[in-house]
Image 1 (cartoon, helix red, strand yellow):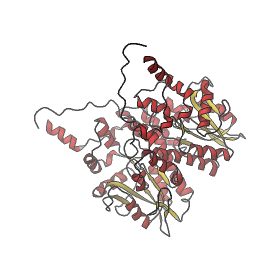
Image 2 (cartoon, rainbow over the protein chains, first blue to last red):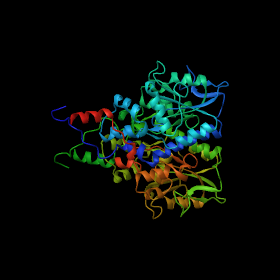
Image 3 (cartoon, chains in turn red, blue):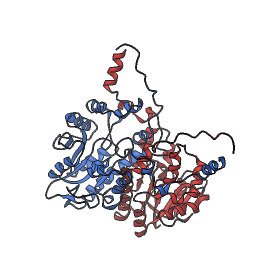
Length: 276
Length: 276
């Protein structure tokens, strides 16, 4: 191409704070290790709690009155999301944040196909996966990576030390059914073959699609943190930290801060009053 | 005051992403509930693991070769940080983020003295504190809020539903000793009176001051997530999420991204090559 080059945005001086936190801090790494160790303790030490029920919500039940798919005599399994759950996408986030670029689904597709050696296993994930398999529990992945890229994703998991995943058996992806990015259909497929005794992910959609149907930020948070769903965290459902992208990053001031919890610095108020 | 008013910075349209995450999302709330429930399960159900050792690092031991203060016949206690651990500082963060203002220690001091009714208990914290006290475990707070504001901080804890804290007995604050914001001295004071069977906080400094002596971002992360310290997360040491402020938010691109995990989008590379 000829002519003047495209203007290049100024390179950021440092990664965004959320990226520093998730990929650089001991705190986020500790949160991940903590979740994986709690999951292993729950599954292996406590034998998954009540073995008659899975931790997959039964069709027709709700977040306010959840019921769970019963296990029958199906073999035990755990179901994990992939991105920012068992894998950290260092390469992709580096490329995006060093250029200050927004998320681009086409770039993400290229990443799925060419980034397998630029990921790392999430802190604690390899030890957990190994302990679970040693205990006779099948590890199943349910991800919104594309079914068309299944071989690349299996290669990325293997390269990161997370073992073998077989598309359609222990690896379920967007495009496997007509649900698009909704995961309940794939969860039902998995729960028909296995007794799912634990799930892990970085988004509420990794546990139930019902959260996505709640338009209010505050009500979505309440549905996760209060009532019967709250009892599941650390006891069947295991959350991994991700402040970098996803369904958690929304809401205006009125959504995030209850009206009775807003404070004004008295010094600022006094200065403003004085200036009148 | 007369004259022209000070220029007012444009109000941000929405809270920063990390604030949306921590205070607005179901994901962060679930991370908190998960940590508190894992702590209660560890302490109450599993009786705190090995009752001969506390989870407080013994003086002279290291992160690479940790040893722990022995308990003798001292009564069981848990030690918790306060801010973004048992309390969420909604009012302060609202004031700061709605104006786009940077952190100001003087404003924070005013917040300690006037914000007690503008906090909320962190998701899961009240249930955990109640379960621990019911099990006969003393709840002790070790915070870098100022000793001079002890009465205000005790009032904030009580207002949020976290019960009574008594300065010098179950509430330890910056200024109680000569350590400034370092917490090891106060931890030693607490461990001399109690058998500390669990600790919780949102910063690595809530567990040991040794992390702060590690200048390298990557080495600090490795010290938390690998080696003998890793075994403590979820099993004596419990981390709460906080991507909004603190020691986790540092590092340039070279610190956060290992050189062998940087990816360049092949389409961007091709476009750049084509433009030459």
